Image (cartoon, rainbow, N blue to C red; front, side, top):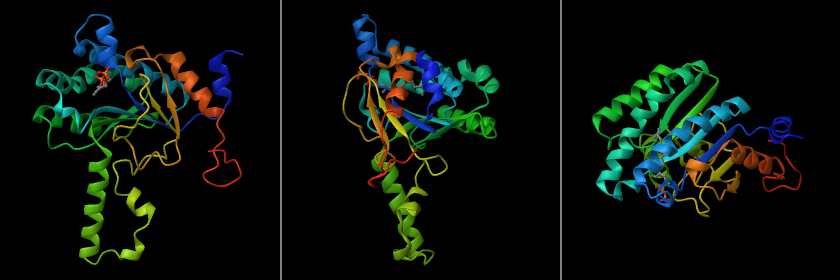
Amino acid sequence: MKLEKKVLNGYIPKHIAIIMDGNGRWAKKRHMPRTYGHKKGSENLKNIALECKGLGVKVLSVYAFSTENWQRPKKEVDYLMTLPGEFEASFKGQFEKEDIRVVFSGRRDRFPKKVQDLIKRVEEKTENRTGMTLNICFDYGSYTEITNAVQEIALDVKNNDLNISAITPDVISNHLYTKDLPKLDLLIRTSGELRLSNFFLWQVSYSELYFAKKHWPAFNKKALLLAIEDFQNRKRRYGGLKEKKS
Ligand code: FPP
């Protein structure tokens, strides 16, 4: 059976996250600057988001800029800051047609004002769309996300709005950037690295992990289908003995 048909016959993960790694190496292999890899990576994000929508995925979260990425050379950081703008210009029409909502997860205070305004505008403009949510993690890091959650919860306790004994995993989840999103089913990392790099450390607790060899700009529809097919063959037991269909 054709791969796509086979995948569509199985359970489609509701929430997929991707660590889009390998833009730099992909460009280097082609004797091009790293920024060219990011440009192609950004174009690929649009394609893969549209493929996910077509398959019936409800949320696609992508790691586009980490809290640690500010350490890169200024020229590269400056270029990465132009990507949300370029991306908006290129996805506008098609994303509207496909009813795709765009949200951003992460700190916002360190971006240039132009980027902050764009994030706000894109989120407001797309907020009523229900076809799929694209969650762009930008200046995102799990340590920051969890630290913020702890600070907010501590403040509720200090103000007598919350008892310490009422702090549950759900309370913590409800203070994370992802509080309105479904549980993460599948995390994909491209480019062959086997680590999480401060991404979705809380969210990943019972997700399936998939590591693809391809660099992000080359991660195409077939690679996505293979990842989902692999996910569909996993048995998810959540610590129990019986398999639970998600
Ligand atoms: C990791 O590859 C990739 C990034 C740090 C940037 C990813 C960003 C995009 C794909 C586009 C984002 C789009 C929007 C809309 C914000 P790397 O540079 O670490 O690659 P390397 O490990 O080969 O050097």
